[in-house]
Structure formats: C-alpha cells, structure tokens
Length: 176
Length: 131
Image (cartoon, rainbow over all chains, first blue to last red; front, side, top):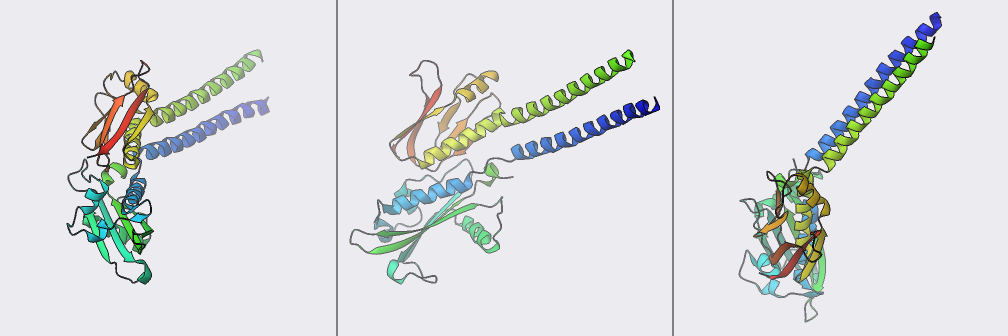
C-alpha cells in the first residue's frame, strides 16, 4: 500500500517535470520564431547581383563591347543613362553605387591600372565593400556588394576585361 | 479501489488535454507569425521589385495573389493590393499598413489586376519600354 502511494507521488513529480520541460521547449520555439520574423528579409545581395548582371549585359551587348563606355566624356551618371537605371528610391540619400573599370586584356594583371573607370551613384558606399573585403566579416548593417569580371571584344576584335562593382545599401529595409 | 482508478483516468485525460492545448497554442503561434499580413506585404513587395529589376522590356509577368487577397479580405481591405508610384512598388493588405520597396529598372512599368477570368486571382506586371 505504501509502495502504491509513493508511485502516485512520483508520477505527479514526473508530470511537473514534464510540463517544465514542455515550457522550456515552447519558450525556445517562441524565441526562435520571434527572432526569425523580427528581422526583415535581406534581399540586398540578390539585388546587387541583379544590378551587376544588368550592367554586364549593358557593357557587353551579346558579347560585343559597347565602345561608348570608353568614348564617353559626359561623366557621372553615364551608367544609369546608358543602362536605363533609376537610382532614386524611398530614401532621401542615394542607395546604389555602380562602378565599371575597363582594362586592356593584353596588359591585365593584379596591379594593372584600368584604361577607364566610370562610376555612378553614391560613392560613399564603396568603402563598405573595402571594409568587408579586408575584415572578411559579414556586417549586416553595411551595404552589400557584388563584383564581376567579364571578358568582351569590341566590333574590331579588340579584347577587354571589364570589372563591374555594384553596391546596394537599403539597410533600414533589409537589416536590423 | 474503483475511485482510485477513476482518479488515475481523469489525471491522464487532463494531462493529455493540457499537452494538446500546449501544442495547439505553439502551432497557432508559429502559423500566425509566418502568415501575418505584414510578412506577406514585405515578401511580395521585395519579390516584385526584384522581378522588375531583372526584367527586360517588353516582359509581362503574372503573379498569383489568391492568398494575399484572402488575407486582405480578412482585414476588410477591398482596394488594390499592389500598386506602383514612380519606381516604388507597394503591397498593401490592410488599412493601416503596407510595405514599399524601390526598383532600379528605369522602364515604364504597369501593375494591374488580371480581370480576364472574372474573379481576380492574379496581378499582371508589365515591363514596357525604357523611359
């Protein structure tokens, strides 16, 4: 009889532990779900990659280098005009930066200087890329960068290497 | 002896019911969080902006918005759920809310509901010629 009484007591203690365990698991799941949905979806890397791709298609139209990129003397907003971009956004400050560096294919090396550099957008954002490259950390609150090196020939068969850099900020909408 | 058996049964039933209640609350919380109108607005606005950015002129895209429309209906919102101002696309599924995201493609973009099938199930995003 005494044994039975103890068993009932043990069952009750077990159920208290069971609920404590359930409570801990539930709190964990609540916390994970809450933290997961607290942060916005970060699409800046995809956006920067799309921008780089669009610039690549614009610099090299079906594999033929657009020589306007070399002959242009108009300056700053050439990329957005030539490639049909509108860098205005819901923010007051410009949230994009695009840079095209054109190299002579025959003399290209790690230290070679570009034949021409064209840029457009907010030049301050470029520093974020340099910082992320040097520290190799993924800073969520900094701009996202996408870089691409493409080979292209012009209509006179002159080969070029084109280095494209795109940067997207929009931190307030993509990171917390 | 019988009384004790009855007690045991009742305890077990209460135990199982409480466990089920616990699990139900958990599942309801996860589902409600994952399908909240705010989440859906953000997800759709960003997806549409990226689609427009990637599209070349002339491209016509159709996106299914049935779940978004039912969410808007639940929130007593019966106006356009997707609209565009300049180069900013906005998704709005409730009166007090909405999410906007900009796109960089400088094309003439139009967004409108697909009314060809009678009831609106899709929205059409047309990326026309460059501005």
